[in-house]
Length: 88
Image (cartoon, rainbow, N blue to C red):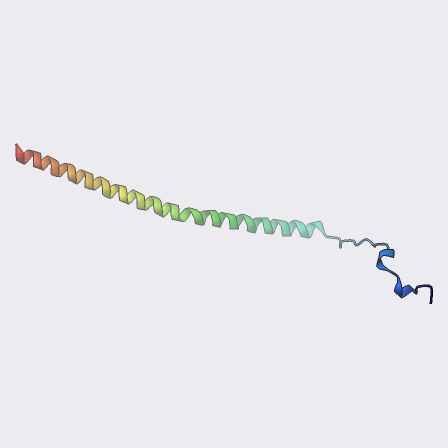
């Protein structure tokens, strides 16, 4: 009983055994990598395109506001000319 049995052996005394990764096939990885890269590129394209859409609408809205403002300025100029011609 003085000697420890094999089942009582401490894990600190057991040397570690290396674990090897399963071999991978480069042909399968190439196809998968190409597919993932294409999907990521398409996703980035749509995300960036989606962020530009509100900007295009804002540009159109700003353009319409400037056109309206220019029409108001022209109308004010015409009204001022009409008042000047009536006062003479």
